[in-house]
Image (tube, rainbow, N blue to C red):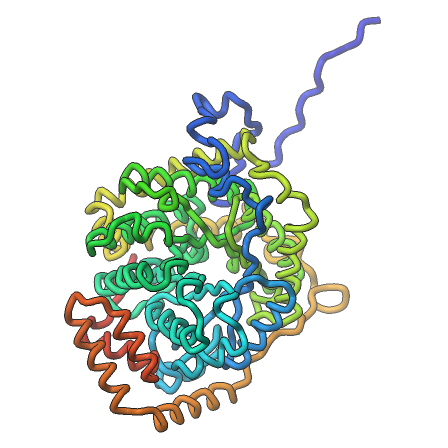
Length: 549
């Protein structure tokens, strides 16, 4: 009897449409035909070769793992120093400093608007005295330090340099990154101080000064992370981040720098979100697109100028206060995406960060997550294990094309520098992000997007259900102690020397001279972050945000 080979009808699919987390449509299956006339030689090449889709180094993690950082800083400098020593002792290889809001916006701890914010979301740094306490017992020649600071980046960098000098360190050996990405503050975060154009002047002054004095320092970390946290899609994250990068490059060229003098020290900072395949493709698309921009648009000759080196951080906006233990799983998947996407350094969020700053135990679990991925999963044993996946390559192409379309629209507003500035000043970028954030929130509310523990699989409060977990609390006494410390510093410093340094900084700000030498002299004279910021405010003014409707 002949065998009946008639296939059973396929069961119906669970949804009419399938998309990525960002809304990119997904076919039911990808094949070679899905890629059209895709040429692997030009689209992929080999790791360490143009266009670097498969990674910027020939051996990637077979040579060495990414730098494992844990973003940390809270309360006083002394307390944060203890956390840094704890994490370094547990195997962390680099420091990542979080600063409190007053420090980020150039206000001293005793400013009236700083009340209640001192040491709350990061460490309070008012002066060189605080910076010395922050890195007490930590040899700066031997660690790589990332500082998440933007509007006051030049001041915090000079404070770091002053500490290194006091340690007797060779500045040529000092390595790390200062975020220094002020454009994304106007787009997504809001911790800006000055109008856009003088703020850009400070950015390029940092480029020029570090070229001569800190050759191993990454002068900017062009940040898509906060753009994504504000609600952007993956395509928008790539587009607006790289458009910011183009603006910084053009601003540096306009300031008289040669592209290959500063471009090798540019770095990027991306979000690692929940959609595993989309996130992997996002990093590959960004790397390929940036290499082509730097080669074809800016005629960079140094291969290092073409490399998109990036730090990744798992998505804080994805963490939930409900069933916070679920965040351990989310963070592990997000970190895996960053590793498969070829990151150079990584921060993993802690399970309790939807509730408070992380406890030591929660921070340790987050660090162990990276160590398990590196040492136990096997994904680091081969370079770019996802290459050639039809789905991955299709998404990489889609994200690159979507990002290019956005960047062309921004260029049409006025060119590489003026286009992005006008896009920000007109509210175009902010409006696009707001629309994306609204669409995602609506999908959550309609249960088109499931968030486990929030809009489905909800655990009841109480026995065997949702429970409370220990959280870190900042003692209000820290603020009073910090203010007393600041006022004592003002009383004992050489006031005439401090005021002379501030006057010289203010004079320089009204010229085109580089500001960094004057800022460094001011911090070494124990001028405070707020005083230095105020000296620049008197010349530059303050930014007034446009209303986006």
